[in-house]
Length: 114
Length: 111
Image (cartoon, rainbow over all chains, first blue to last red; front, side, top):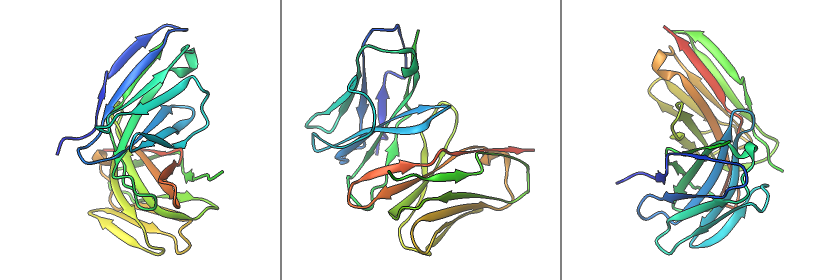
């Protein structure tokens, strides 16, 4: 079974621009979660999509948004980029259970904002 | 707000030593997962524990879930340089599908 794939792997943007990251989950998985990882803050939860609906949301500003398509692929968008948005963005897919839910991560997209 | 506190944050030991990483919370989790992450890659799932008091072994790694399902530990016996990495615990918030991650423990095993 193919793992979780994320594109692009690396991205360099300037302040004020917007960016879209893509995540393809493991076949059969209906849930995709997005995380931001930085050295100072660790792994922080952005949001989770399950069957095309946002099911959970973290404490990030509205500049961070996402969506999920009918094939479970998901995209994350960040508008009006700030320097502090530089991070590794990880997506994880799972079957979507609400009590037992093993998440499998992709390799991440390294975003650098200049 | 559920929080998971991991300790220690950093650990540097010699090959062959034993170590334990702790993951504590005041909240009850329906399950708890341990991941290992290497630089530039995503976390890799090591184990999931579900039942209070559960112990799982994965070669030299032993994972335990606390009786009250609020804490967990990871014990590594005879650590090897290949064990070097960032270890993360993550608790599943009941009936939400949401995972809460600890800050992680950076382990360095020197040959």
